[in-house]
Image 1 (cartoon, rainbow, N blue to C red):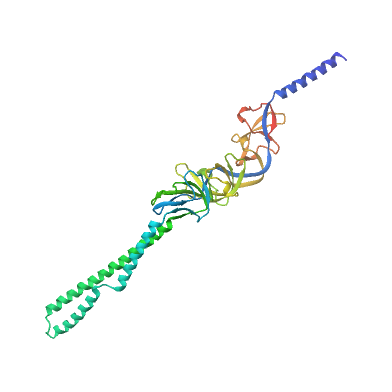
Image 2 (cartoon, rainbow, N blue to C red; image 1 turned 60 degrees about the horizontal axis):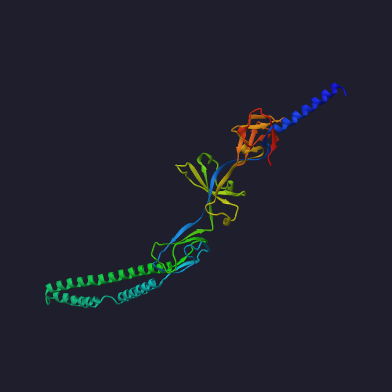
Length: 371
């Protein structure tokens, strides 16, 4: 082998080794290809799940607790709407009801019998009529007739007053009976909704009075609240689709907007919308939080890049020989995970999606397609 051939072979080997070493020493860059798909005009908001009803039941009757479905510190229990969850001793109220009924009957009986003064009034009216006739014939003093007339008016007033007093007594007793029967009904405490009793504040044997807290219950139904910046609110309306990702979960829940608040919070400049998710409400726990993406519009067959590839209106594009090229692009709709590129890139182009500020324009990198 001639010296010239040896030199050529050695040069080729050195160049190959240099290229291999250069490639090995090149910085790796995580990239993703530009793909076609559905671009969505979406806005993000903060999500929190609430129970549709969260209420502390207060005692509406007074007495000792004789039965309770749960005791303080025993955890929680599920109940159905209308189920009796606590019983207050009704015996004291039942005695009051019996007494009120007796008073009511007595007053009604006295009203039927009429006033004892009624008979005296009727006799006096007969005497007055007879004496008025005699006075016309000058056979009875006119002064006595005038006195009898005053006595008649006095008795009429007494009879009327007694009647009014009895009618008032009847009305008062009827009203008292109505309240006492309501209080008797209130001794049996029922669940207003189907849900979970999460706290009990009284024990069997404990005496409660009106206004005493008894139990706290949350309904099975859930309310999903999404708060948005007022700047993002335009175009958000009932019926729009949304997707929700809760913290600590990889699952994406789909749903739609049910209603929107008419006004925004003047301090935070955020507006609240209420959503329904396509999931059993039992899997939504009050207090869960996360992020929502609300779709306002969409473009089909659009060029898409991962949202995290954006540097404002620029993209770090990796050309065919591995050079990083900072390209200005026209950005269209930006969703929760993807962004639409209206111009500046082509399908299949590779764009850097991680550590964007670690790369310089013109730097050579080894592109590694993200999985």
